[in-house]
Length: 341
Ligand SMILES: Cc1cc2nc3c(=O)[nH]c(=O)nc-3n(C[C@H](O)[C@H](O)[C@H](O)COP(=O)(O)OP(=O)(O)OC[C@H]3O[C@@H](n4cnc5c(N)ncnc54)[C@H](O)[C@@H]3O)c2cc1C
Image (cartoon, rainbow, N blue to C red; front, side, top):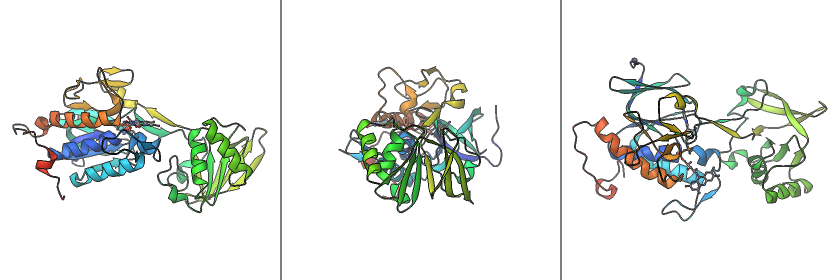
């Protein structure tokens, strides 16, 4: 059993996963006077909504006939903000151990947090990009090499090299061609694996000179200084190289999800999901709850709205662990209000 050290941070509830469901759990816990720390392997909150489809509309969030995924994330973060969650982003949680009065959580950066209870809102596992094998790429990451686009306005007027041949590469090439100074798409084949309509539009923009198709080429090297790219070197199958001057590189080779250490934390795992009690979202380990896509019970629907309801169930079930002996009187938000509002 681990003992928290003097440097360990403290919270009532540690939430592993800052996807839409983890973010809403901050609100639900906050309404019951429980302070949260939120951990995510990604460097920004939003989970699948931010990493996979930020600009796609969602139509089944109650009260919003249509909302873009990125906007939903912004609104969830705003709804959580009055409860002042501590965010620990950009590093996966690698350790979860029981302590005398709760749990010790540690992320890959060595940050430790002691919590009375834990909510696992880890979706399909920690997200990480499939990185191209280019030496020194780490030095450019998050400065001029990006694995996801948060705001396309960030690329206005800039020269962008996109690498990849799937939907993300093609969709972002089309989208950024409206704002970027120049868009070049590097793909090792002449044919793209994207939706036929999008692939056809890509060819059309290429024929109009609005996008450069650099095919069949692969990424070969990077040039630049202090994290800022000046050029991407590409090579064809015969090893002949070309130099593409650029301000940024967006490699879209897919995101890998990794259940990682979660799988060895002693849960009842069923097809990569954690079995929970549907009434409380409690896992087989006392004090640890699972909600959202990672949670499984008979009849479970992998929808954001199901995850929101699970966040409320888990928060109510956790309350007696954080506030033992205090009676919990069920109250509506309209009666209780929210701090600062
Ligand atoms: C293209 C697409 C369209 C969709 N459209 C809809 C829709 O219209 N309506 C709908 O309801 N749903 C939709 N979904 C599904 C919806 O996005 C998911 O149900 C939702 O994102 C689940 O939220 P979550 O918070 O449970 O998990 P996720 O969004 O998957 O977030 C989990 C987070 O946990 C983090 N994490 C995992 N393990 C660790 C760890 N060890 N350490 C640190 N962080 C960790 C991950 O990095 C990730 O950010 C869609 C999904 C896709 C891919």
